[in-house]
Image (cartoon, rainbow, N blue to C red; front, side):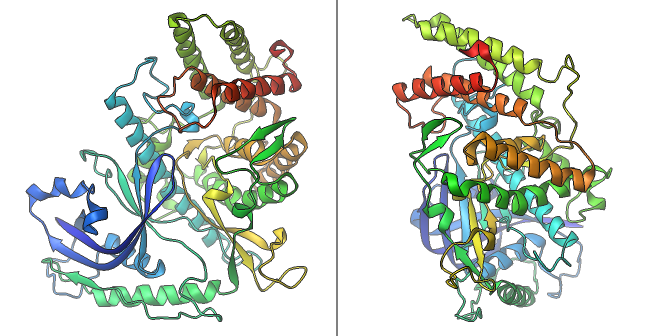
Length: 544
């Protein structure tokens, strides 16, 4: 087998930057692609993409393993080039570029510096870089494994005529840090998934022939014309399969900025939330279209000793590496569990106590709140200790997205169904489904209930809605596996304690910038008090 590094160069016609809090995201329109040999001393410089916006050129190295010793021009291109060609064709010459710049996540209480295993209250450049890289690796792994899970679910249910089309997860075409010795800020190329009608006429047929201009100047002589032809055929078939679907922008365009949630009005000035009268339908849709397909694939894989026995497109080493990037410990594939979050809260307590001790101005509120948080963590530790006969029912770990809000999804309407007034441009929830899922920056390998918990608490607006979704989820899991999910209440208390620690760290300027928080100090203290009162409503009278 021969291994060789080549350079792929994309000449860009346009570069469009999209808004994002923790990343730089660009839509690239590709005019030309070339493949060239590269000398060893140039390889490490190819990861530097600082000037791609002005130069309108993006280059990156690819390693080729090819067993065709003859190299006579009849061999197929390597998988990475096939995927690039297919992505360019299906994305109408467009790709997505992501550059990571911060590492705040739900799992680390939105801290943008040293991870939660560190007790240091200081920040430094190395910890910022490491945390950003850790997040980048986790997000890339989240995309890859979620795509595998969704594809597996689609294959397992391809005879189900009622729901033939599964939610799309973009393909990771290239990641700068797949090789561990790579330096510099992490970035990645993804396939583009836009409006379902882009490039199609009224009847769903392609309006124009999208040729891909590829120049191969390398010593490897692949049959690129055949690869382009295959990609064109694949895209044409995909267009015919989806021509009864039209994009639905209802949920992203109707978000409300203030919503009454679990007893109190909450402001959401950045993206907003799904309105109260629609959020239950929305939550059940994403449970059906995203959560259960991914989780049921992982449940099936958990019964096999080898992932490749069920998913031949990934080997065991790649599988484990992806899980490690998403796990609570990057050296192992140990998933996040309920008790792991309690350990995170204990570390947050120490950080807050140290800040209180070093404060120049005494704040009596912090004294009271720190004592309350100590009791909260102790109460969480006893939720599942069996003293009242209750134990946490075990469930296999899965990929959790953790932020299934409308801004991270796109949606279809099925025009074959029409709707109640015959207008396909009017939203009807029963005809709406998830088209694609993006932004896996919160993704983790974790107890599957974390995913449903965040939907209950962040998508839904009250306990009745949350209990209804939890019941639906529990019934689906029970029917598929016979496993018990357990009650929702301990999980709701955990998420509220989680929110309180995040807010307290923000109030004490201990997030290292975090997610560019919008709240002023008065807003923060008001939100902290509302979360405290929610815990009282959940039965913790010591929070009064």
